[in-house]
Length: 68
Image (cartoon, rainbow, N blue to C red):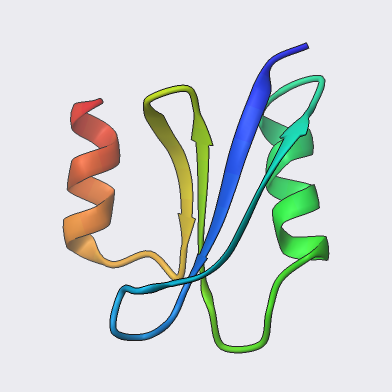
């Protein structure tokens, strides 16, 4: 099972909270990230060094994920 890092960021980009978890795949990691979400925080889900998911998503983030 892959290890995932889930980060929650304040509006200014600083880290609000983070945790690591084992998940069966990317979809499960995204579900867990939303289930544990802090109000108003941006979500980032990482699989190793690859950013696989972020919300809310802006065009710069979309482009960065697409390049990876």
